Length: 426
Ligand code: PMP
Image (tube, rainbow, N blue to C red; front, side, top):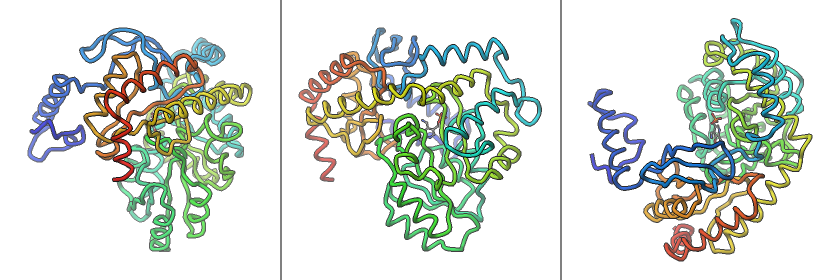
């Protein structure tokens, strides 16, 4: 193996290697990353999710406290006292686990209350929501259940891995990111040839933080007799007048046929959901979606999500504080001359382009107390290497200023601005 040219993806499958040989080759790659100080994955935190986080020494980083931009806890709800209280009260009442899958004894009133709260939040009739145990399965499991090879999934090429897994058994066409002209071409071409035509997009994209043009997407899809699924994992709590995500932002809440999302970001917990305009889809998933029907339901801690949903309406100040931080930080980065791409959400990339400079920047940020995620191939294309950051309502201006100062220093040292302008020309 030439580890200098490898990526994690290369170890997914290797012809003629059994699982032990393949795992050994992979271990060699991990050793190569460790030896060359590229091992910026699975860093160990020793305090809770938040704008400042304690980290354990691991050879790549020093032990200490870091200003963190890695939590997708946009409103700071993992640490909200009211939500913690709701979780503790629920655990006191119900214990720590649900004990069974939902069809055979694992369906409790705290699940029903959460599903009702979700239906209400998305302004749908009760019975329009189903809660999965992860955001990942709310996509992968529901799609595996709904779509088969006689159907077509038309997906934006930047959708999350969980969508790609969900459509593995379905005829799938990808269209270039946010390109509605290409989408229309595929829709027109596939007219009537498939039982169900489903267009699948994210509300907010997880690497660039940009938004899907949902109005056009919904109109086009319906014009050609398709249905639209929007995964708004990163939009809820962030976009829209009242935090109801990209659907509210574009005023298409009633037109999006299926919404999926997660409890692990704005709602500060773990799990995910599917909301459908057609309630039969929900009961179909309840009985036919294998990862739902044959897997234990979420723990009583999920009551924290029910409280979090209420708090989005009761305490709009968090969304305002978040946007205040987004605007402040983004313009600070731009003033330094850095390229934040098309970000219009709480996800802010600093595009660097050059892979070596990108990992060097990630390391220098850490050395100066700033914890971010350097993102490289295969998560994005090679020339699209970037530092990815998530903003939180609870970041202080002092923390943001400190990060901006470090960026200014790194930009002088590495010449990030120069390499980024090279990308936009490429
Ligand atoms: N959808 C998108 C767009 C995501 O970014 C993610 C994960 N970050 C998921 C779904 C999966 O959600 P979870 O991590 O809660 O399983």
